[in-house]
Amino acid sequence: MRRPIFSSLATGLTALMLLAGASVRVDAESQSTRAYVTAGLAVPYQNGPSGETVHQTFVAAPGEWTTGWLIGAGFAITPRFGLDVELSSTGTMSAREPTRYDRVENVERRDRFLTVGPRLFLRAGRTVRLEPSLGLVLAFSDAWFQTEYYATANPPQLLFIDAKRPADLPVRLGLAGGLDLRVGGPHFAVVPSLHVIATAKSDTLSTFPGGFPTWTFRPGLAIRADF
Image (cartoon, rainbow, N blue to C red; front, side, top):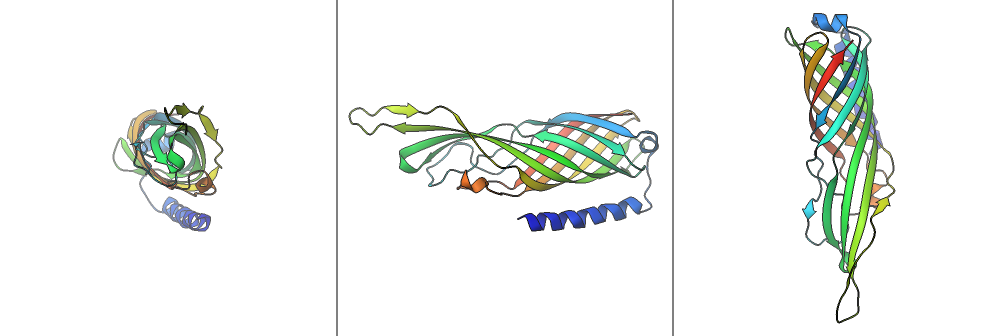
């Protein structure tokens, strides 16, 4: 999984460098501002079971549309090219999954992504700028399990519910690509965006043998202040 990610990264970085050196028009605000900070909301999606599910042999990582957040900062190295860092989070995804041994697993999961990489500043209008970006990602997952099961004694059967317990999931490597649309003046703007994040599964299948998502699709809307 990691080799395709790093191969794609190298290809993407090369393309960004070529674009940065190309003769593109840049608006005046990108020439007068150097640093910027961004904060906003996101609605990330990951594929996986959600809510009440049918019986399955192995527990899978839950996935669904959630409400998350993002914060970031960056620095324009040239009028066309900059570097930035972003921390973003999904909301909490949850599923109630009947599984083996007459047990039900109530599963919750949340991902956080630290992304670092280059960004281009391309003029699309007097107050509009297109900003494609590419970055390396570190993905941090939090997960919790709570098991329900019935006592074997009959009658009656008693329902037992274990305490919620955290799962130890590894940090994963990934690659992110996105397109932001900066709309506003020299020092303040609204930024709708669409980002896609691909991450390695690493050792996650030992915790979620029924499957773990590798793709995150993240529309977002943020505000940006430029200095």
